[in-house]
Image 1 (cartoon, rainbow, N blue to C red):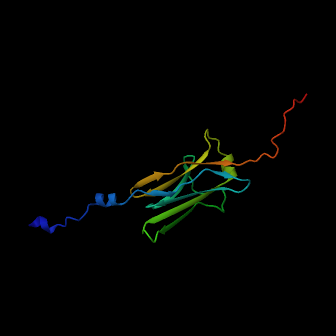
Image 2 (cartoon, rainbow, N blue to C red):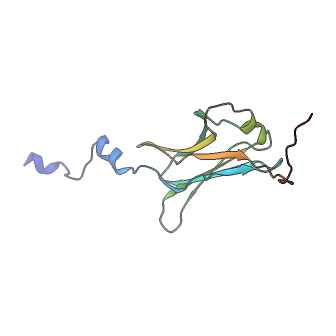
Image 3 (cartoon, rainbow, N blue to C red):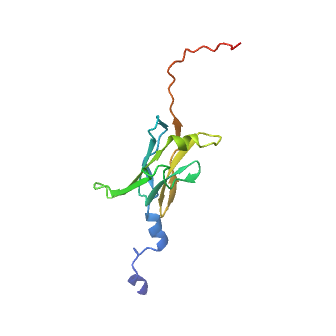
Length: 143
């Protein structure tokens, strides 16, 4: 009789933790270009996340080199589903790309974090766009 007094629906902390889903990316950053002095903007959006941030070349991106463009994060609840979404965007400047001397291209990825765990997006390469005006220049020996 005493066993019937305990609610069979009570859950332990472990069960509650399992009911929290892992974040899911709704938008991942894509390859982009810095054009002249216009920075490349990378965007990321995830559902079920508490925090979304960027990691570029293995280091967490705390702020842009430009004081006018810190990383931005916005949270909102989808009114149709009731699911919390978190968006983040970051501007990558020409200086950041040109000052990177790694063996690979300058790359950033988005990290979405929740109490259940974290997920990583696909990496997005950022390059400096250049346009050659006259490709028909011939190379002549200088002697």
